[in-house]
Amino acid sequence: MTDLEYDMSKIKLIVGLGNPGKEYEHTRHNVGFWFADELAWQWKTAFKPEKKFHGEAAKAVLPEGEVWLLKPDTYMNRSGLSVSALASFYKIKPEEILVVHDELDIACGRIKFKLGGGNGGHNGLKDIQAKLGTPNFYRLRLGIDHPGDRNVVAAYVLNKPSADDRQKIDDSINKSLQAMPKIMAGDFEEAMRMLHGK
Picture 1 (cartoon, rainbow, N blue to C red):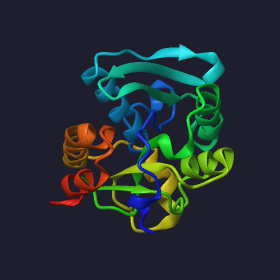
Picture 2: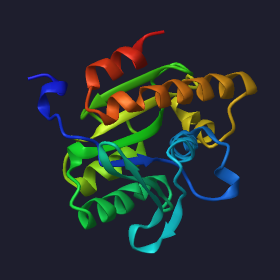
Picture 3: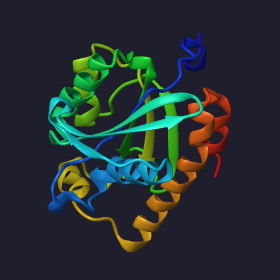
């Protein structure tokens, strides 16, 4: 059974990962927030603070139905608290969730879309997996490159990318946004073709 045969559920919750606060706003670890903000703008909806969901949430009404957008304000390593709160409140299953995050193991500007898998040491994914009790949620992984030494990873992800890298990341966000209609329609194979190509 391939990932794609696992479940053809429609996505009902899209989570952008990042850290709250001005000092983190433009850092690599906030790529998921950048994506969520662009998507909310495109879908003509706006984020509002939601205490019970430990973050900012926005609701979009699409031809496919209602979709929630979420930006946890728990800091990265407690993202699962926010995701599980909204998912359980609206009875959204793990395989109806798409988490958008920065990915060290992919070159800057490259994208991977998949269901399930490991967390690659990503603290946000680790916590979401623990709180949902399963790794079977979709991930949109936006490449930020690896600094080459794991001892400097924490400093690297919490710093701003160079202007050149930022442009590559912005391009990957735009490319991902173009694939969203396919993702929302459940046409995951076509979305992968769009996203994984150069």
